[in-house]
Amino acid sequence: MDGEERERKISKIVETFRGEEDIDRYKKKIAEEIGSNKILKNSEILKYVKEEKIREVLRKKPSRTMSGVTVVAVMTSPVECPHGRCVMCPGGPTNNSPQSYTGFEPAAMRGAQCEYDPYRQVKQRLEQLSSIGHPIGKVELIVMGGTFTARPFSYQRSFVSECLGAMNEFYDCEHSNSNDSYSKSKKSKIFEDAKRINETAKVRNIGTTFETRPDYCKRDDIDDILYLGGTKVEIGVQSIYNEVLEKIRRGHTVEDSIEANRALRDSGLKVGFHVMPGLPSSDLDSDLCMFKEIFEDENFKPDHLKIYPTLVAEGTELYEWWKAGRYEPYRTEEAAELIADIKKIVPPWVRIQRIQRDIPSNHIIDGVKKSNIRQIAQDILRKRGERCRCIRCREVGHARGEPEDIDLSVRKYCCCGGEEFFISYEDTKNDILIGFIRMRFPFKPHRKEIDEDTALIRELHVYGQMLDVGKKPEGISWQHRNYGRSLLREAEDIAIENGFKKMAVCSGIGAREYYRKFDYELDGVYMSKKL
Image (cartoon, rainbow, N blue to C red):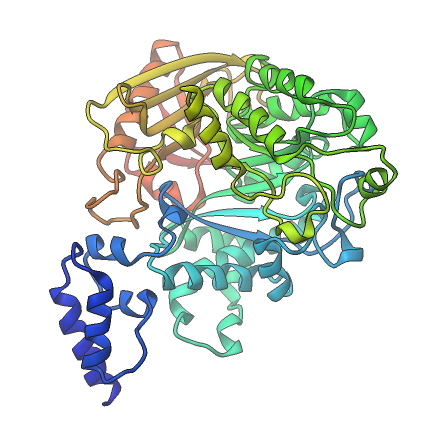
């Protein structure tokens, strides 16, 4: 049977599939029709399926795009952190892994496989996600590995440029399996061109996250981040107690974290904290107090949070302390109880992105070895009759059940000298979040685009299964139903009521066309509009 006949038979059977039937029965039928003794993979059938409802059934790991974006994480090449090495840090050039990574995390292994070439990493990840049925039109790029803002700016610019180039050119070379598919055209090497092309590309960079240290978030660093298309910065706070930071030789202070938080917010960027319970000189009580302070103190109040219980890995100074009996990490049960206590008090405008490092258990000498620690903590809360109200636990798609009565909600709080507004569409009865906007009235902005009459939109996000640009909503997706438009209008109205005359949006490069629909124009690094 030639390839054309094979494709015709598969397509004919796929057309009769309606999604509710037994998928395995249909896969066997396809194998019989084409005379194959091998059952086709879902990814092999997906290319013949056009209806989104059926693609949902065949799609593997649906949570990959359930939050409304396709996440692509890339690793920078191994290099020492500028301050040296923290006592718990397992990575670095001597281990041929990026600083703070063991090298065995999935993203780190993909990076090493691609020799830390950003173009190849992005292209390979897009191919993987596309092959298992995920839409890839809206990419949130995450740049990981050490202190990115401490690298020479030429490296930073080249790295991001190649990432954009891989997105811009993805559909030009997706069918090529040769090494030539990784060749970089001239247009991907010129950063300004790469940004311009990506604004209307088939694979758009709707947001970029950079990981770095609080003491490398000065004004010049932030200006570079914004120029590179950054929309979010995750800072390694680790602890808000200087005695703990000094003990682990972190090389920065809590005051650095506070100033970085303010400067990032006043520049329109989203802020994520990485925090490590169980560090030396801390205990369960002090850690719970620390998280209460993080959520309540106006110097902190992060938008996003990653909680990494301290682990003992071979080759670290902490490992030597552990061997000598000078340090003992939390047991899984202790950490789970603590995390449950933290989740109980988290504000509804914080998203707990991750709990536990993505390190294989056989590379953890001591500490929490169960990768499902988040689920264990959730089970503890459930048994207590309590629940977590973080964004991730409430967002439509992850939340159980379908929304019923959806209402507009406006929460206001003070942070870092400014005023923050968390404006959202929610089913308050079932506690399900559809989408939200983060708006800030800044305190001391340093950017020339932001004057005393300017309000900032730091984030606009609608949840549910991700839809590519221009696709009509169907199935389980809540995108493209005008929630974003309504949230934007509400934010503008609140800003006008408070005397602001201009709105500036920290927009991803590939999201600029969306804001142009509402009369926003490119204004330096922002999309702005006179109110």
